Length: 85
Image (cartoon, rainbow, N blue to C red; front, side, top):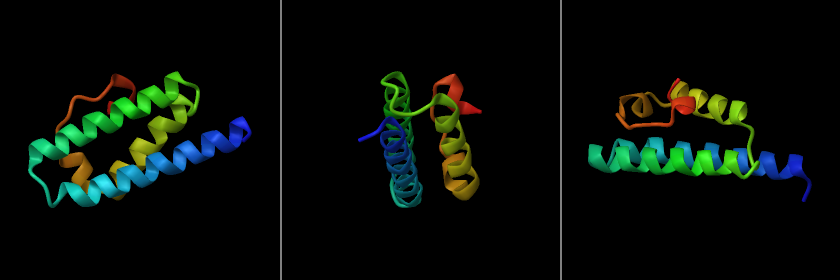
């Protein structure tokens, strides 16, 4: 698998995870949703650290997910500074 294909696959997996998380956020307790957002942010930062995903692409994915899913904006979680914007 090429680096580009690996990065695209990682991006698709993150997008899918955020979409599922957004759907679940409306059906689970707020604290659980916040924990899932925190875990997903850690997974994202790990993917960036392992060069599986560029930081700018990760930021864009999170920004787009918040735009598509207002319920993600409502979840208060401590995100790494790069993803909080």
